[in-house]
Every structure is written in structure tokens, then in C-alpha cells.
Image 1: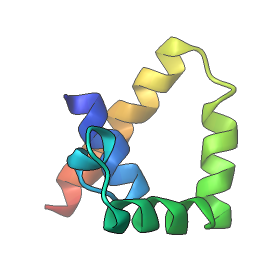
Image 2 (image 1 turned 90 degrees about the vertical axis):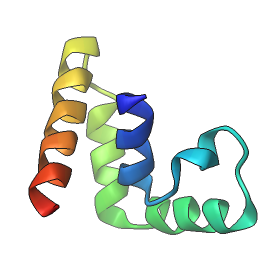
Image 3 (image 1 turned 90 degrees about the horizontal axis):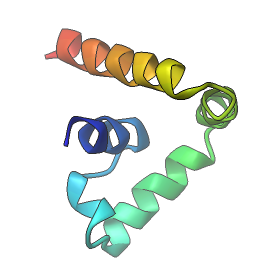
Length: 68
């Protein structure tokens, strides 16, 4: 569930988007995918091994907690 929440936060959608997306959720994800910075992050993320991906997700979780 932590991974799903991190992905939802990353793409700016609710967790529900991954189980039953609505039009609002789709628009939020598409808007973020058009962001050049998000595209760069996704490109570099795809080059990581599983351990590296876990580190990035943990970092995202940590940064989100700092915002709260």
C-alpha cells in the first residue's frame, strides 16, 4: 500500500485512480506526465534496478512526510 500511495502522490492522483480511475484522476495523471521534470524523473527511474527504485520510493515518502 505504501508503494501505491507513493505512486499516487508522485502522479498527483488519489489511490483510487489505480483501482477505479475516474475522469478527474486521469486528467491529473496526464497533466503531470506532460511536465518535463516528471518525464525526466520517469526516464531516470526506469533505468534503476529494484533496490534503486525502492530507495527512490522511500525518499519520496520521506519528502512527503516532511511537507506534513
